[in-house]
Length: 148
Length: 79
Image 1: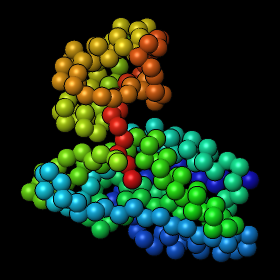
Image 2: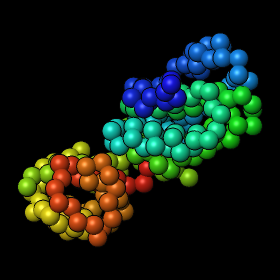
Image 3: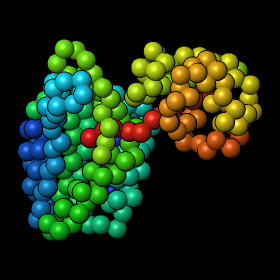
Image 4: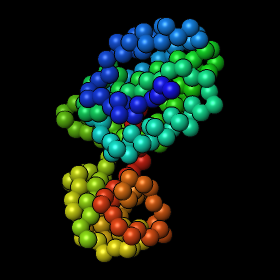
């Protein structure tokens, strides 16, 4: 049986190329049970924070624990669903404002399940994966990001 | 025994380093291990974090028989 998700592929250095979304759709073109592709791209905002305007985020992680956490949450969230395909990518290192730092792509039979799975995966990633973002602001100051 | 202690997220700024080797007497509770680390870095007392021993989160009252790595992980901020 084909593996749905390979946690060894999850991290990318720097911004996530938006073309990955198209490549994902290409992979499932031949699967005629798929009726919905949903791609979520998280993008770095130029927020105004206490130390200035955010110019980018520097991501770091406990990488081996993070890969295990990704695999565990994917197993839990997708179990019992009819998901046909899944890709998750998260950046490590520096991502400038406007760059994508997270991609969640799901392929399912119908749209309802695609929306539900994408949302649930996103919330689980934010809650359960040991990744940290340091917001770099103009003037080379920084502060650690807090997930809300 | 000598154990690799690693710091993540905001704790990097508190300790000024990604990690270091600390001598720990094992077996010991996680709370006891934490106390040893806080002795080296008292400024961590103001911080909240969970402790993972060899990549598994452990409660403060659990006993650790042996460890290669102890990781201090504050609230995550990925995504």
